[in-house]
Amino acid sequence: MIKINYQLQPGQLTAKLRRMWELSAAKIRGIESTYDTSKGAPVFTVEGRYTSRGWTEWTQGFQFGSAILQYDATDETYFLDEGRTKTLQVMAPHVTHVGVHDHGFNNVSTYGNLLRLMNEGRTPANEWERHFYELALKCSGAVQARRWTTIKGGGGFIYSFNGPHSLFADTIRSLRAVAMGYRLGQVLMGENDRSINLLDRLVEHARSTAKYSVYYGKGRDSYDVRGRVAHESIFNINDGNYRCPNSQQGYSPFTTWTRGLAWIMCGYPEQLEFLETLHDDELTPWGGREEVEGFMLEAARASCDFYIENTPTDGVPYWDTGAPGLARMGDYLNRPADPFNDHEPVDSSAAAIAAQGLLRLGHYLQSKGDADAARYTQAGLTVLNTLLDEPYLSTDTAHQGLLLHSVYHRPNGWDHVPAGRKVPCGESSMWGDYHLREVGLYVQRLAESKPYLTFFGK
Image 1 (tube, helix red, strand yellow):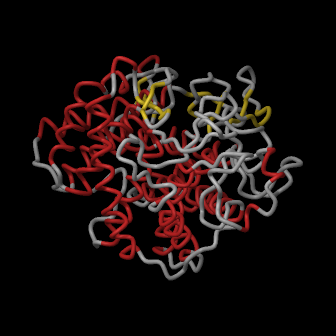
Image 2 (cartoon, one colour):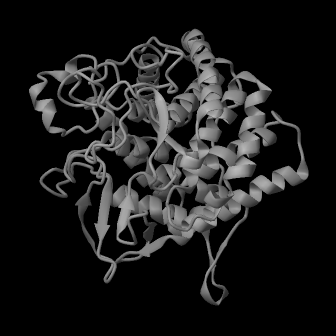
Image 3 (cartoon, rainbow, N blue to C red):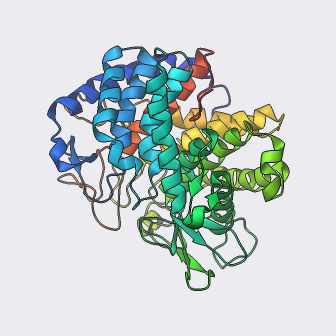
């Protein structure tokens, strides 16, 4: 279980964050100057150098989004220019990519961050540039919402790249593309000019994810532990019935892949923040604000509680809570995680995503006067404090990654195992690096009393 530091405050992390941004700047420049873009998007490092993995190019937005976040944190215009130029040159195919569920990852990290900065007055106001970003986000949200499977009893979900039968836990974090589309007034036009409400797709996807991906300890199956998450939920597309849990990147359907857990932890608090910007009557068709916020908050609390209770004391999880090698590691939950062990890898990228989820849930509950708010806030700060030090922060100037000990796809064996080691360690991922920067920026703004960071901005 995480040993929560209840005395830690955002301002106490300022020096560590400054160091992180200094390291981050050099690593972004290094990737830009050496990476061969003809190979596709950089995905993860092998012996400290970023390499590609042709699958869905879901990390491209994190690459250029990292430069935009770097500018946001440091005001160094090189990174704004880099992020803006590469968004214009490279990201257009991602806007209309009909084959993936990852629109929020790619397009909100780039077009969304650029629009947010302009709306915050951090970049010069330019009407046509703003319209350009808005149009990209409108299209992205509508394209994502088009990947729709209707399920028995009504509702449905945005299906994964695996096909119409597949609901991924990941998509709740990527759902912010649909949120941005709705916020900007976009509708999805279907056959016979049928107008499809993007907020309907957002709420129903979030409801399906909460119902089928998250467990609540209510006896759903023999492995129903409150807060655990199934990476994938399988449906019969002929009749819309739910069939079973599954896992593409975890150990099994009945264990919890911790990055999938982290996507849930981060996605629901973000959507709760987004719902606060809507009028009550906008939520009436789905049972009203209390109903919609209720199931989102239940999923957020349960998943965050599970993370706190099933993660080692320093806040960094192993890649799956049921990974078989953990049984040979003794009382591993009552000591700090060991990324150099011989049995199972940790996943620091899950920790970076989870830290932001914990912090956002704590902030949301604090605004409601909830007594549990401090537990989540302080847990998030505790996790981030760990990640901002060695052995997780990459201080080696020859290593292109920022956050070490990230894992991509353990079952497929895609992760690099260094010579002399038995499990992957010492490498970075583009999503892990991006999310360390994002949660770092989040806490930096809290420490400096600057505008609260949200994906939708003002």
